[in-house]
Image (cartoon, rainbow, N blue to C red; front, side, top):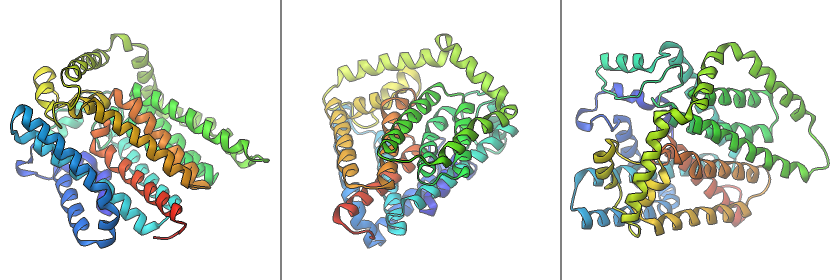
Length: 411
């Protein structure tokens, strides 16, 4: 568990550690994560018992998709290595959720606070990087002097974070945004308002239009859930009203610190029609639809997609995660996966009661916004720094739902 949290904290700064023949696209910390996850799965009986029902279906799906690719395009090392990499990420995420459950049981507030504190540190590091390297090209140059080759895009006055990408970081911040709101709902303390405001400011400063739009959608969902809960109460907690009034005061107090960066974000929003990144995404969507139409049933095989995208746009995948899933695995599997996800959400949610139920539905709203909206602009669903914490928290909630269904409160 601690290894996973450390991995999420240091992000791409693990590139400073020499990785030998791993190349530019693989972190030494990632390899260490997968090795330790495999060892934990083998050595821990409780973790193996709880995790294998999650891991085995993932392994079967990836194996079948890899065989599909081999039958169509022949044996190629790179797609097969990517399949193993994805299986490693999925296994690590599942084991993270299992370890959290074995450690904390159904004390979901403690687990949620743990993640919020982690991302407070991540956001603090992101602000430090912004102060030191307002132009990301200076950061890339510093990394180059340290012996790290990283082909990053130029970003001016944007939070690139330890993940070296403001667009991915903006979407990842939907997770702590949701978690801080859940904690605020269950315990209306000023510190959770402060965390919520800080996370919103960080999302603004990423300059990511899709992340900002996703944050607005998620906040609307969260307010709707809160209204449903309030409608069942005969009283109003005045602490919520008092602390809600402090949020705009905090935003105004911090204005001098983020006004120049906010102005740049507004300029990006107002020039979307002329933006080259937007045009590149439309081009990616068109190319993705052509691939899906050519291979609708079984796809091209997991990450054999990279053969086509590298040739067409010199990038390893499409911009849309759902398109990438359909192109890799086929339309039927993509629909089945979405259907199973929705079914699991309603089955688990029906088993939960009290604050855990609110936290569950708030988190699933975050997943829905990310999967159905934000991931259409950034291929974040396969990004290890999103997939690992999201899957870990999902598996943890799954274990909690299973335990409540069995009527026991401790593992």
